Structure formats: C-alpha cells, structure tokens
Length: 219
Image (tube, rainbow, N blue to C red; front, side, top):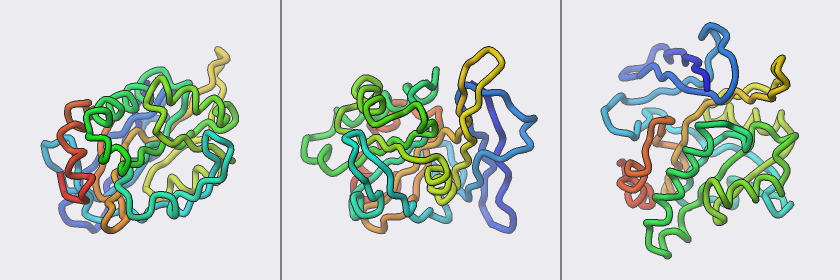
C-alpha cells in the first residue's frame, strides 16, 4: 500500500488537507492529488463535508450483468460508495469487511434500506462474476458491485472528488490500481454525499455511525 497527498482546496473556510491512500502502487512524490475535498476537521472517524458531493451520474453493470443507474437505483436511500478493486492486497478488503460487520449489526429493516456500492477501479479484471464472488467473501452478498469501462468509472469518481489512475503493470508483473481510499456516505434526504470516512475507519466506527446515516443525520 502507498500514500499520495491531496491538495488543500483554496479559498474555503474551515478546510482540511486530507492524506488519502491507494492500494499497491508506487508514489510519484506526492505531487499528484488523489482527491480534493472541503471538510470540517474533527477527531471523529467521520468527516462532515462543508460542500457535499452530488451523487455521480453513473450507469454501469452490476454483478448480475444488468445495467445499474446509480442515481436512480439509490435515490432517496442511505448509500455508501467506495472505489477499489478485488486484487487489492490490503485496504479494499479491510474496508468492505468493516462495513459488512457494521451492516450485519443493523436490524433487518435497516439493512434493507442501506445501499453499499463498490465500484471497481480495475474493470478489465473485475468482471461481474469476479466482483460478485469477491463481495460475498470480503463484504456481503447484499452489497452492489459495479464494473464497466474505465473512462466512465473514472469520470464518475471525479464527480465525487476521487482520483483514480488506470491499472498499471509493474516490472514484477503485478498489476496495481491507484485510487482514493475513502468511503462517502450519501444522505437519503438530499442524495448528496455529505460524510467522508478514511481508510482508518474501524468496524466499531461504522457500527456507531450507521444508525445516524440511515436517517441522513450528521454522525
């Protein structure tokens, strides 16, 4: 796992410079931002964004091979969105596992409301079948996995302030995918992405916060 440093968003009050991670690749000296966000800094796991993100206008393919319109199919529903890939050696499986642990603690009715969406950053290898199998182990079968063409995925990520690079083969033959490692929560009230979680967020943090996110409240 490697680090890249995000740039501070200029001319905004109460902003924080976030250091975000990417899985399994080399850094470029920190000169290239993974993501730029405006956020109110605090000591909680959750960072409430000063300027919420619009939900990406993104139509991809789910693990059943069907078209999935992100905005339409999560409209009015509490939603967690994360970009990663199934061959990630560390952050991606840990993040999905932590969310899954918290998800299983919710009452069945609340589990039905919560949408957890994993968008691959390595679509060439992450076919619908591969994504579905991986999510059953690393997350939960109820989670939505999405794949498609890389330019579409990258454009959708940028709408959320997330930077991702095309997968690259290293000299040793390993294929790595550099991507922002944050989870963004979207409110069922506004459909806006208003809370950000870093890679350091634990299962206990999600257990504590999910009941509030389900209602569109600030954690």
